[in-house]
Image (cartoon, rainbow, N blue to C red; front, side, top):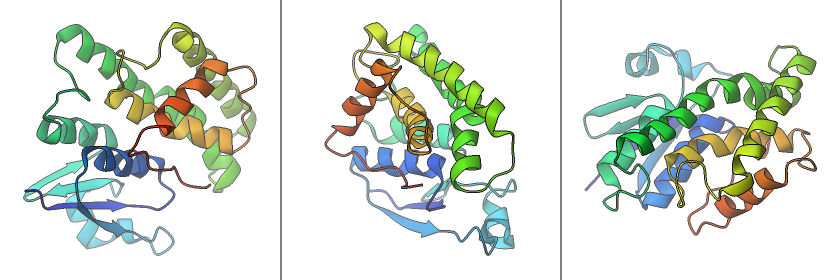
Length: 201
């Protein structure tokens, strides 16, 4: 029996990843949406949970987990009894880790930042960020040209981690016309029974 609380922002793509995975795992949880305009993520109460003042933060009974990738790993290890979402094996886990790292690297500085500048007013150089986004999309499209999912024949937490910000970049104006394999990958993820739609912005 779980007693899970998720602290998040409505428009946070990293928070969406966790909501999506909690739905897939069929886990009930209490949602605590923080008001970024009121700087609730910088409150004394929240900073006691995550001194970096960042979402998402997941509390499972007395366990506090910060960082979306760490939360995905924790939830898969703790609650996925099938072992499907974070399968064992050194090679396969290394492949999953590669994409988790990309989500915090290339995706963060490309699709995530592009969407942030275009749609929610973050500072930054839109042109260079667009170029980084297209470079990443080119890599990802080529990678998916002969694969259905990122790390395995079935979806894993790698797919959950990488899906949201590229999709939000498309909503912000990046065309998929040159990236048919990414488009097909999006469709496979979105056809999942427990898919949770990403933020509108």
